[in-house]
Image 1 (spheres, rainbow, N blue to C red):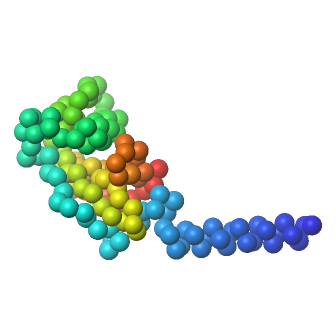
Image 2: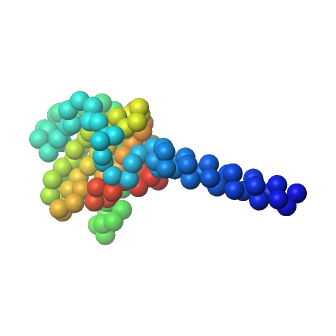
Image 3: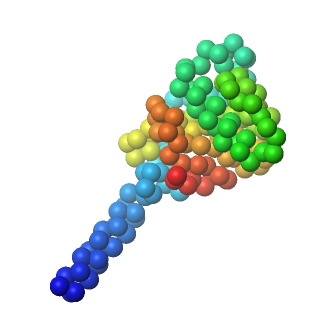
Length: 146
């Protein structure tokens, strides 16, 4: 029985290593943007949008922007009210560059990224396409699953 347990542990551990190596991380994304990341369509630079254009964005996009702004505001000591997309974009425009919204196809799955440049390096959140569910963070072009 003891040998059987050791065998089972060995088989499970080799399958786990194989799965991580072959398929990447648990959220299905590589740890950096590489050739497997294909941008779908043209990204959206919100720096250039007017308040009227922001109001006309799809509801899902507005929700994603609010979530990104709240994520970014967590690191701030200021109490920043972010209740609507215009407030979110205004807050995110306070960074050096951005916000940008891009959609990527990675290994057959679509993801939406909201990205800003608070300095020289980008930070952002990556949503499962069509949802407000954050699957990963982008910090200095390093992708980390949540």
